[in-house]
Amino acid sequence: MFFKKSPWIIHYDATSCNGCDIEVIASLTPMYDLERFGIVNTGNPKHADIFVITGSVNESSRTVVKNIYDQMPNPKVVVAVGICATSGGVFRECYNVLGGVDRVIPVDVYVPGCAARPESIIDGIIAALDILERRHVEFRKAKSEARRQENKLRRYHLND
Image (cartoon, rainbow, N blue to C red; front, side, top):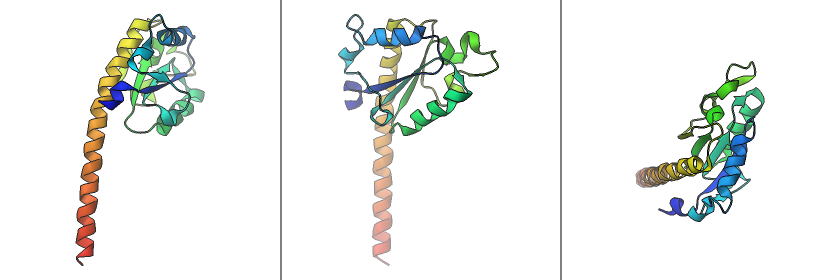
């Protein structure tokens, strides 16, 4: 319940034409007001819960995308915005384009469009909130189970 109230997003442009980037920023403006859901855009992946990525992935941006994803704490959700981030778009046949974001990191929500409309981006991020909340519950259960197993092992070793 808490993650749904104030998730932080990090936005990365992986070689897009900036059409989707403009729409992501537009969704944060007062006209569409993504912040009414408590969503804050951050520049630090260590504070982010949702990774919003636009554009196709090439060889030079692959390591950056992977590094940002690896620095994010669990649970985390990835939202691919635009047709380029989804499948590579019109650039997928280019020699330097690997394809969509899912070639590098797992993607949870796909927002299609060229350029994706702010309403679609908001719908995608709201869908990501549900996934984030579900993963948070699973993460807490797994953490408490690990703690329970650790305590059981500790008691076993103390009795030896």
